[in-house]
Amino acid sequence: MIHEAVPNLGETISNGMPTFALNGKYLVYIAAYKKHIGLYPAPTGVEEFQEAVSQYGAGKGTLKFPLDQASPTCASASSNNRRASSGSTMLAARHPARAQRRSMDNPQLSHVPVMKTGMLIRRPVAEVFEAFVNPDITTQFWFTRSSGRLESGKQVEWAWEMYDVSAVVTVQAIEPNTRIVMEWPGYSGLTTVEWLFTPHTDDTTFVTITETGFTGDGDNLVQQVTASTQGFSLVLAGLKALLEHNVRLNLVADRYPRGLEAP
Image (tube, rainbow, N blue to C red; front, side, top):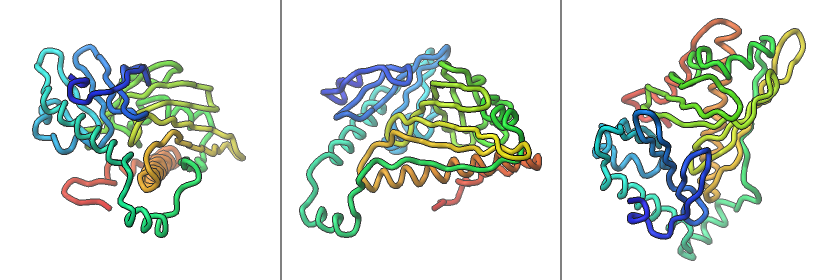
């Protein structure tokens, strides 16, 4: 079905899932679960077909098709076709006048940007590390549901139920009280996120989070890194309030309240 909707697709395995790519960029991932098939296109391309796929738990970048129900092939194919067209458009040559204006107003990036943020948490390193690997704690300041504890080589699914969004992540490395590395579906393809836990004075811990592997044009890269920086900064602020003061700030849930068009 996907090959019929978008010819010339490449196939690979990424993040432990069958993956289709076009022009060197990931188009869609597929994962099989006990009760459903997960389809993970990048965030663009799903919103236009919300009505057609709403019964399949469509969220931003996530579709779930129960194994005991028929899948909406037309809607899925249309979504993938639209994403392929968008990708081709970005790769096409731009209008000369527009290109000249962009070169003057928006200088080209010399390298792919990296997201990096950090925070001092006034708790011992073992407690801070545990807050990220143990979903019983993490669900109090970041996502709302997880399929399991983080372990090296393991895949887990995280969900932000207030946004109807979920993501499958693959844990690439776990170094107790020192480092976590995972791969997950980013804004335009898979990205890698690394946590570093550095013990500081008086039983405090400095947490550094880095995300790499962003893809896209200059403007899109800046938007992705900006959004990632904001998101992980909110996560760290929520963690700090929880561990230091036992307060749940609900920062992630309150960033995009229903009924308001957040900037």
